[in-house]
Length: 231
Image (cartoon, rainbow, N blue to C red; front, side, top):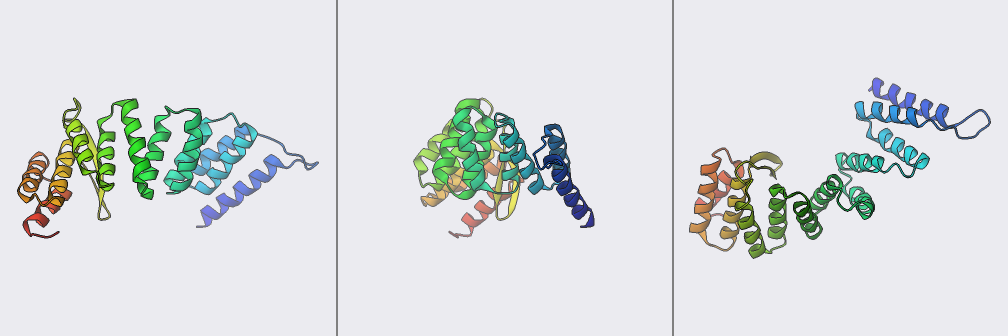
């Protein structure tokens, strides 16, 4: 705690020395600002890192690469609204910035904006042909109750040439697990079939997903729930 306090105090004093000259005028030292940013990141002092980027952008509004860093910090702090707003500005200038588009798509997902998330993940797939983004599209479609569209997207996933080597990280019940994308996609088909009361088909999908990845926690839970006759 004392280390953090001393570091924050040092940063404050550094800003004072950097920007206030003897005659009260601003003195700009961009290289020192960049050093401050690196040190604040090392200490995970994201507040100081954020303010340092603001100062750098005041000094040089064309230093757009720092906006990317700012968006990443916002995302790390789970400030998803700020990510979305900043991403919109960046993407107006560089619509093919896949790093920012990925941050924005995930921020939209975590905020519950499934329509925006679906649109952005779909654009990411168009730009990269990365099949993992299609799974995010299918998940958003499912959450939007567009189950037929989700099934069509899963069919596209299963035909993708990278399907057998792709993985996806799933989040559920305050847990997360990286699983083969093929197993995750088939599990989603099982969930859709279960929702439509097609229990035999759902069981077939869940068992197929588990055959591909026996350690699949979510798949095991879905099959157990189906067998117990729970909703």
